Length: 143
Image (tube, rainbow, N blue to C red):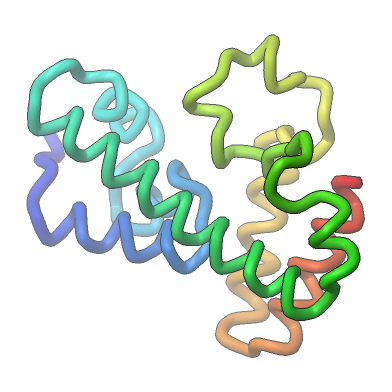
């Protein structure tokens, strides 16, 4: 049985803030995705707090990308920025929405595609120009 310790939670949240999908961040921290999903659905106070922290980390990562888009392509940001209908990145807000609302037919929602993107980000590592190019390609692809 894997316990959610403070150190484990810090690692998972750091991976999410860095841009990882929550279930991939959990796997990278040594928590099987099945266990992570169980934790996300537990009704106890400890896991409700964890769930809020995961969502906050997702929002922080998304905000970082939104700011980068605003700075790199301000006209694109104005066209799809605040106040405009949003198409949420796969895996980020899907936890708060049902599969029917998200649209499970999207290629980017496919777990194999998410795994591929995660592997690409691992290969790219901390090379900002390459990460930014990949992020822009994903933004363009999602339009």
